[in-house]
Each structure stands twice: as C-alpha cells, then as structure tokens.
Amino acid sequence: MGGIMSGTTSPARTERIVVGVDGSAHGWAALDWAAERAHELAVPLHIVHAFAPDIPMLGFGATDQSSILAEGKRMLATAVARAHAVSSNLPVTTALPPGFASRALIGASRDASMVVLGAIGHGLLSRATIGAVAQQVAAHASCPVVIVNHEDHSEGTHRRVVVGVDGSPSSMAALHTAFDHAAGRDCELVVVHSWEAKGPEDPTLQTDSSWPAYESHLEQEVTREIAASSARHPAVKVHHEVVRSSPVAALIQAADTADLVVVGSRGTGGFPGLNLGSVSNRLLGRTACPLVIVHTREA
Image (tube, rainbow, N blue to C red; front, side, top):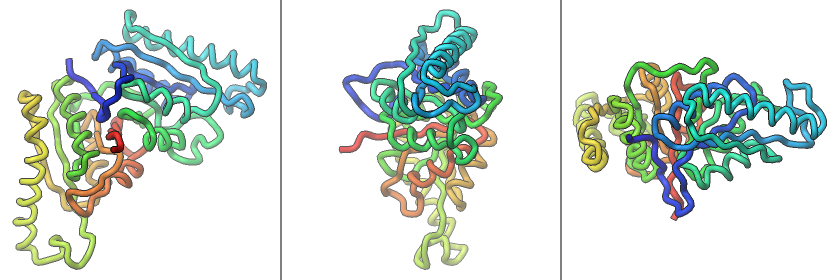
C-alpha cells in the first residue's frame, strides 16, 4: 500500500512514524492520526513525550523532576492504550527524553518516515503563539512533518489530497509525497499553482487579454511537473489548476474540501512569485485538514 514517503534519502531511514504527545487536545488528535496511518501502512509507531526537568509542565501540577517523570510515564501509557484502540496489533514503542520537544522530535526525525504533531500544545508558549514547537520541527526535521490542527480529529471524507507546487526541488518532493498518499488512500490529487503579481512587469498586471495566454503557459509547466509522478501512479485521478491568488489563501481555501494539504518546506525558484518557505510557515495552524511539510536533503 502506498503512503506518505520521505522527500529525503538516508541510509538510517526506517519505515516508522514518530508522533509527539504532550497531553493537549491537539496532541491526542495527532496521535490518533498517526496511529491510523501507521496501521494503514503497516509500519511501527514511535511515541515521544519530552520533558524539561527545570521547567514545570503547565496544566499538570507537577513541578519537581520525579513528579514530571512519573506524569510523563503515565501519559505515554495512556498514549499506547489509545494507539492500540486504533489497532490492537500495531507495533508501538515510546521514548521519554529530557529536554525540549522540538529537539527530541527533530532528532527522532532522522530515522523516521514522518513526524506527526499537533499545531498547539501545552507549555510555556501554549496559545501564545501558534505552533512554536511545530514551527521548529517543520523547519528542521529530516523527514516529512504532519501538523494536525484540530482537537477533534476525524477521518476525512473528501477523498482529495491537495499539493502546492512552484517548480522548486522542494515542491517536487511534495508532489511525489502527495501522489504516494493519494494512491494509498484512493484519493483524487489536486495540484495547485498560485500566482501573485510581484511587480510592474508581472504579466498579471498587464491587459486582461494577456492573462489567458500566461495561464496556459503555467498550466503547461505544471503538467510537465506532474508527468513523472503520474507515471508511477497512473490510477490516481489528477486535477491541476493555476490560481490568480495569494498562495496561502488558495491553499487554505483548497484545504476546506481536502483530507490533506502537502507543501514543500521552501521554494527556491522555477516560477517567480511563489515561495513555499514562507507559505508553509503561514499555513501552520490555518488549514482545515492536516498539513504535510516535505523536506529535501541539502546538497
């Protein structure tokens, strides 16, 4: 069965899903999502809960190291039981490392096929910023990162995967990942290229008659991007569109009728006007479905 695959290569990579839990509603939703995917892909699930010995865990009343450690063990036991409620035969391992969650999850990403976490969690920055940990992990992980944004996770029913492309290596990796997931879930794949005017020479600022020709040119570029991945998954129904809109707005709107949105960690070229680096950050916590951020290994 197909599934989310890494946009990177590593000799130490294993086919396991890593999920971070912290006792928050978003964290439990992320665990549910990760357990479902691990079951579907027949891969192990590794549950990580990090604790900082010198910083109280807000919301649990534990202030000393022994109490925090005991609470962490109880949380992991609850997490294992919850994962096994999804699949009683699911191979599950756990880790309770000292330190900050972002560091622990980034480290775990080096030998994982994906890392899953909630958009908002418990901690000193909880609710003050959207995804303090999610931002760090999404920026520095060595494998695809899945951000689950809703407390009440339920399996999507749209049967649509949306991917944003811009011609960069990062977005090509995102496209491959999106194809793999669409094939494994029997979903339609919607490939979105959004164009925003960036200066007086931008074709979108010229006469209206120039836009159809320019849109046709972009559609041809997107079609070439799709061809290689489509050959690997010929059964996947693909729809692609060029949208004259902000990329963030276009992908947020597309997410309303999708089960998953996939983007690259950053865009570096190909088509001016779309930088998936800033787009991926601005999408955190704002999509109506889980968001996947795909990395490529630096040369």
